[in-house]
Length: 87
View 1 (tube, rainbow, N blue to C red):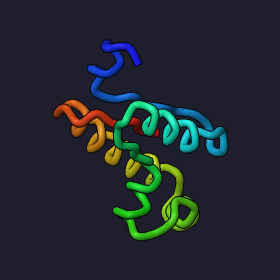
View 2: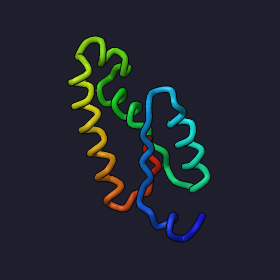
View 3: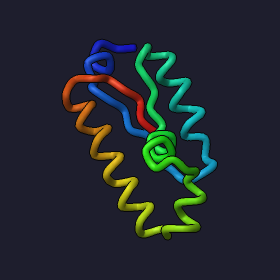
View 4: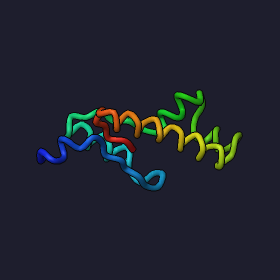
């Protein structure tokens, strides 16, 4: 990797469910030697249930609010200098 990419604090991947973001993100993180963070895994750990249960029992609007807060936490970590590939 070029020196410019090595100094980049984080890479954020977005896309539709099932499009391979987690797979590609993990491969990229391994290639860069960076940690990999999966936002859905962060949410499931914090909420203690699968994403599908959040949608079913609390609705999409509440899930999106939770997702937004989880993303803000990860972005803060990146801004503090922790390089990460985040899907």
